[in-house]
Length: 314
Ligand code: AMP
Ligand code: MG
Image (cartoon, protein in one colour):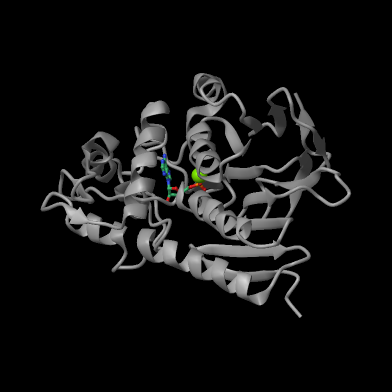
């Protein structure tokens, strides 16, 4: 008998896929193989990945990459452009400096930050679509697709499911969630919204949605604390510091998970006020903002129930 769901570590996070009814072991295998395929192309932690090879050749030469990698880099540049650089796939040097990924977490000196900040600029990515190459113009530049790759991977998992008899599924790639299909009783999907001050899995509310993707960026995902202050993994590309726009988390509810992933990061960096013009460009997108004072604000059409009394709707 097929499993009711499968959980594995992939893309640097815990991934759970739940296939209802016609789920078969083979479909689970296909999905997780696909997630690994994407990870092998796009992870900064795998030396042979396209992204690692592009980074190693920064300032030296263009690197040939898989069409798929180029597609995601191209979309990243688009989201960088529309978010005025709040989302910036060249944030790699900042991520490394703070040691958020390689576990050497520390607060860098301002001089170190000043040194690398000029390297963070999505305009210095050269994509050659004819040759299928990517060139980072300056030595020391580094791509990091951590804010978009999980969304892309979730969309690709759904692409596999569409070719099967499975009519309902939940894809959860470390909180990057897709609700696939319509529930049998036609009721809405209920999705927990992470409590941004608690460890993963503890929720502050429940949102009810149709077939949608629900993606959250927040201060809880990766962080360290020093002298009572929290330093998290979403950086201001302008300051080289963890973004402090007054938000604890942003949840984006949309149709495309790659888009929701990029937007959740961009909106988190921009903050509530400055994200309005960006969100206006994506009319079918809803958002939940959780602020540092524990207040919550949502865009108009959302059905959110707060379950943790410490939080309140504005
Ligand atoms: P997410 O959880 O989707 O918001 O993505 C956060 C991850 O994206 C971090 O772990 C970094 O690898 C990377 N990242 C951090 N800050 C930014 C930024 N401003 N723009 C793009 N990627 C970022
Ligand atoms: Mg993101």
